[in-house]
Length: 151
Image 1 (tube, rainbow, N blue to C red):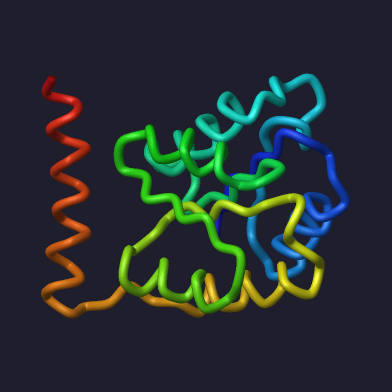
Image 2 (cartoon, one colour):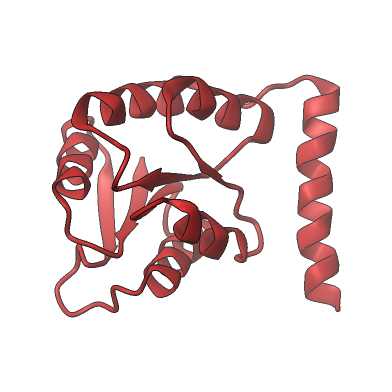
């Protein structure tokens, strides 16, 4: 899978994230502090990773900042992106299952290496629900993007 990764800081957990994604066989594209010479502002690099997903250059993305909040906000401004800030494996599973999230947002401050691996396990094992109500909610979010673009 092609995964776009951004971080506004070159923190140890961000480096572990890159190594873990590659170890799992993913093709990784980096943005922000993880890419020499790139703009490391959280809004800029999170948008870049999210655009990779929206444009089809990446299948999914992981965006990181100190709390994860700014990265998730910036990513969610890109039409077609459903970013979820996940601080545990249960939330990551639910984000994939019920929200068909395609961008994982992580906190550099809160995410330890063991927790990161649990979150990634749940994220990649999670499958979008085929329940009609869940699909209707995801479709509604898509229509919100379309309405925003029509304005």
